[in-house]
Length: 250
Ligand SMILES: O=P(O)(O)OC[C@H]1O[C@](O)(CO)[C@@H](O)[C@@H]1O
Image (cartoon, rainbow, N blue to C red; front, top):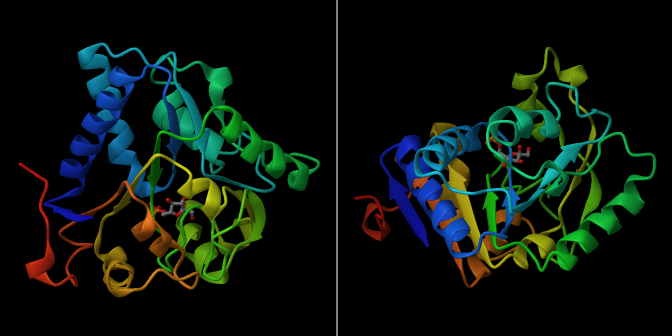
């Protein structure tokens, strides 16, 4: 389940190949997408390979994991903006089937219910991409979130706000709440690919490796999924016991 690659580019290449194989097998696949710096090389590689191989992405439906409450789609730190910049505006996606929560929605709680419902109506997510927060969050499901959770509004922890403040001019500008897919929504995906790169993920990946499946470490739930992969680069894997490493690369 844990696979170590030499660097983020090697992971990006592998994930991009998996996604393209999925799209070629089922051109109306439902993809679960994540944001954050970890995903940038993945989307870069996917755009490059889709163009090179002339893959038709127009039948896809996508659901993003999360969105900040209070940021509109034109705000450069909103996740809709990120997705347009890194993926949606670069390939021929059917834009009306690229779903993200609306950070400015007047009734976020109702929107959450609808979002989980839309995923179920789409037949669930075929492949869900996940990053991981330094505290083990996936999406914005912070430690202590119920494994039975559906899409919900979350107050962001101070740690997550500090981690994400690097994208904003100051910590004060980082929103205090977000909408996130719930852990149960995520776990209903048919396949999960969790990616962690860089030294700042090394500590949490060692904890994830050792941890039982517990709500105190939200990402640990992925270890109980029947079809999940956890992909790390050498830096993120530096505290994993070497003898347990599986290597998919090459
Ligand atoms: O890739 P990064 O920037 O470290 O972010 C990790 C994770 O944190 C989130 O951005 C939420 O904070 C996730 O969506 C993301 O996958």
